[in-house]
Length: 86
Image (cartoon, rainbow, N blue to C red; front, top):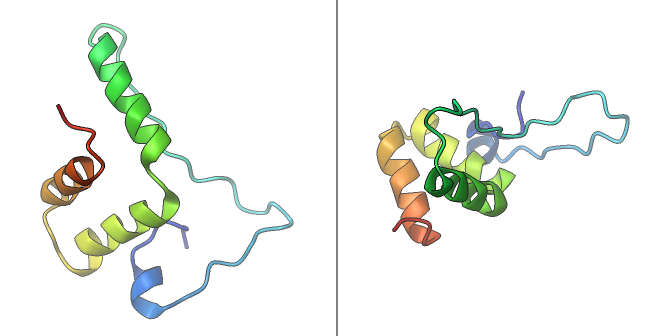
């Protein structure tokens, strides 16, 4: 079970606090080749990292994995909703 799985919302499950730190953190980390990394790409990735929450990612995963929505459409919608597109 991962904290970002969409089924959590569907089933109404509660994510328990891992006070013993048994499960490693599940953070998104962008990986980009230096050859293609531009200031604009770096700025966009930083904006997403600062804005995206676990709950939002969980909701997007639900839309894709449970509701069978198109991943690109889900991502584009999130970006537009958070005014991260130019």
